[in-house]
Amino acid sequence: MKNATNLLWSLPVALSAGLLATPAIAGGVPAGTLIENTAQATYDIGGGTETIDSNTVELRVDELLDVAVATLNSGPVASDGSNAVLTYSVTNTGNGPEAYNLTVNPAVAGNDFDPSVDGIAVDTNGNGVYDPGVDVILTGPEQTAVLDPDDVLTVFVLLSIPAGVVDGDEADVDLLAEAVTGTGAPGDVFAGAGVDGSDAVVGPNGADDNALGSITIGITTVDLVKSAVVADPFGGTTIVPGSIITYTLTATVSGSGTAAGLVITDPIPTDTTYQTATLTLDTASLTDAADADAGQASDAGGVSVDLGDVVGGTTHSITFDVKIDD
Image (cartoon, rainbow, N blue to C red; front, side, top):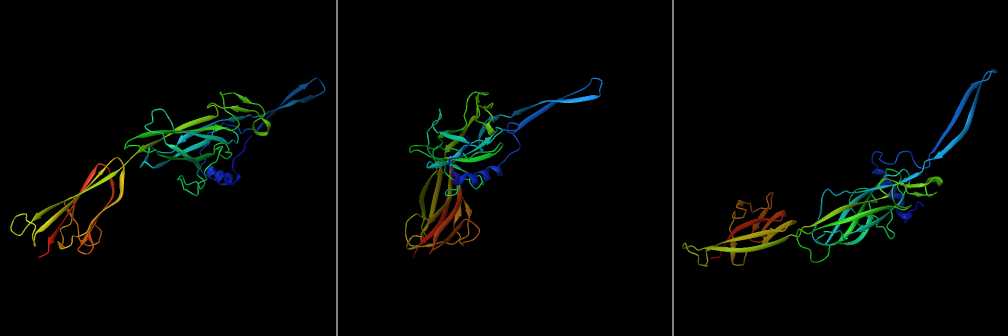
């Protein structure tokens, strides 16, 4: 009754599970263990002490079927609205080797949206992070390899996010694991289905368990607005040779996510000359050279300011001056 769907991945999965083993939490004495006992009687009927043995009683420990499922994500997993990966652990809490059928339910009541399930992958290399092309994706039926008692298997649920989600939407995804031998009410018996012909007995969890993982949508947008103020040589605002143009670039990042590696660039306009040492970020001066600060500026290369990773709900302002050529 204990089988795996794919012998090609059973070995690496077993190794992964072994590396993740936790202190003993399974159901006590291993399934199939023989408990043997022989009684003795000692007596004297006048001819000296006699000792006799009773018959030996042998009892084979039945297999207890159970499992524990838990999310390994510390909180909701952020998604930009395209896809998401949720991470779970599946632990054999019985006392014998067992495989488990896995089922994903992405349509949990109360969801703002229901993601599509692209597959369930096994943490083949045991690093706890989904590695496309490395971690094996299960095929139907989506079933684990046989896990020994206390073995912990990390699995990844791969999801696609539907169109139309908005920033802040949330969804739960349920992963269910069920013992291949069978599930039921605690104490139900599958005769002869356990280790070495013992019975298999449903454990306290019903030989199945489930856990919820969560996704939150963090859609981030960047809005860039450019404005100009002119100061002419006469104290006015006419646009004539010799006038100074102060450009302001305002970058507004909206949403609950992060704009990664945000860089603002602006070429120096034709017929103007960049005014050295006028580059600022949020009113703080930046050097013109390509050095340790965020900015650089020159007539040939224009202006470039590296803002790095910018969280939603923030605004940054860049200013610099050019002179209309005489």
